Amino acid sequence: MTLLGDGGAGSAVAPRSPGHPARASRRPRGRRSQLTLLMLACDGLCVLAVVALFGSSAPAVAVFSVSVLVVHAFAGLYRVRLDLSVLDDLPLLLSSTLAATGVAAIVQVATGLGTLQVRDLWIVVGQTLLVAVARSVLYAVRRRQRIAGRVAVRTLVVGCGGLGLQLVEALSSGEHGLRPVGFIDDDPRLPPAQRPLPVLGGIADLRELVLRHRADVVVIAYSNVPEMIVVDVLRGCQGLAVEILVVPRFWQVTPTHRLLQSVNGVPLEQLRRPAFRAPTWALKRVVDVVASSAGLLLATPVLAVCALAVRREVGAGVLFRQERVGLDGQRFELLKLQTMRPDVESDTRWNVEDRVGPVGGWLRRTSLDELPQLWNVLRGDMSLVGPRPERPHFVERFSRDHDGYLWRHRVPAGVTGWAQVNGLRGDTSIEARARFDNHYVENWSLWLDVKILLRTVVQVLTAAGR
Image 1: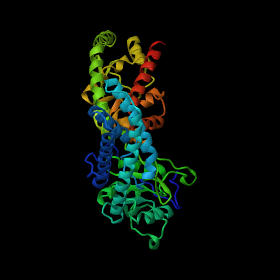
Image 2: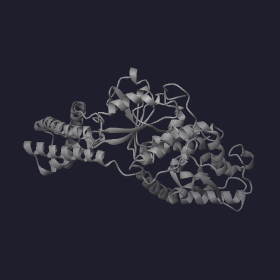
Image 3: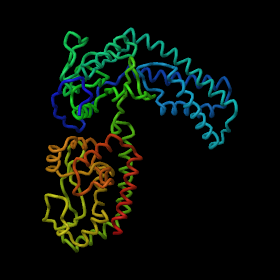
């Protein structure tokens, strides 16, 4: 499969080793961050001005101000867009201000500060209009700065074909705040005489070129390189402070929506920052520590009974220790309750029922043999939820045979995972497991973790009842 190429065949590129190749991110995009701060300050001043005009108590002003700023932020009104237009912002400004007013009203009633009054609706109208006027001025100033080249953002364009040329020509006006510095393509379709910018390298060089040319934005305007190779290269850039804009497939026949930006009639969709790079990812570790600590404390009697039963069945060596591969390919010692003779370690993880006694079989069926992994979670070797860890030689074999397998290791291994609750355990497709695990990595949320844990509990209870 190709990225809707302009013609010609692209060269194959081996995917980079994943992990976290760029934990030391480059400088922040200061000029773009400045506009976000200006919009925040502008909205805050407008809130204070409108509330002061209509009159209100200090606590009510504080509640309304915070509500407006928070709701606007969640609505995406502080994202820096390529096309600065108040008319595009206006519907969202009005709806989010209404939502903020509702939030403020609920807080005021709950805290005894008062109830919503008719004049509060005038505050909504006044707030929206004042913010629209203020942003019009702010956007006009910023457009002038863009055209003058004072806030231009260095940009790389992937795809040296007709679409890439169209985008570069449109961006040359400077109005969108992007300044292309070169093309990236393995097989440029445009002849050298028609290229307004040089071809700096191939798609495999993207990460290196971003760093070398200090680029803040990469625009994917199609190329002839196979799609999965582009995906692997983009994953390798996830540690960099670079914004990725992609021309959507079939954009010529697909209606645009608010989340898309536009350059000269060509829509661009921003790739969402990977969840494991977001600030909320730190909450996952907090949940892991709290939950594993509580789990170990509550499970101590159960572990003691299970350990005694294991000791009676298999003799010495209650704990089973095995080297596994986790975050960034780092190895750690995984703990489980022993369920078969300690001197037997099969090269596969299934079809071992003949080596497992009644106690071991029951522990496996109820997943109680996994309880010691709560200690791995507390230590930081693992997380409650994540891709299940494999032994080093399996990782080496699977990563050689299955594209995308290594990308599972961008996050810590888990006691349970998205692949497992979808039935991919034991003798099942490795490729499917990697696909589910990578989906989890790139779409992580705390709620997804909760959902996986709840489904795990249901599956464990169901299996225990058989």
